[in-house]
Length: 200
Ligand SMILES: [Mg+2]
Image (cartoon, rainbow, N blue to C red):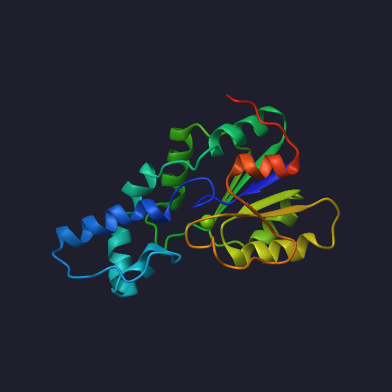
């Protein structure tokens, strides 16, 4: 089978981990911003700062923190197990140079560091339903509700396709799209697909 995985908040813990670096930025620059929300998407929406200020923070710490992002529970073990069993693993990330300074370099370095096995990676703003079409994907997973909805609509005309939403802090109470199934982690997704993953 062909699996297409999103990266941020699907394979790695992005949003929550970024908060540490936001607070560091505030202290280092003596900034007065306060946290105004917790369960929202994107770290920059959690504080009473402007997008420009948030961008400055990301350009300062983005590369450093991206290299430190922890993997989500079970992600590397399950994906590597799929790869070892002959499934094709495709990673599709929308990381781009508007927020990131070196998205490609840093992403490839992080994947190497965590030892994730994959066959192909798309980095940049490419519609994920187009990637699924190009790759003839069977399974797609992402934490973005709108993206999963669009892929589910694309899958709808085809047989035996599966679209999953990775549960995150910000999306856990939001309604999800038709023909999208919510999962807690990659192991939960494999269980729903009836695929057994090796322990190592
Ligand atoms: Mg994501």
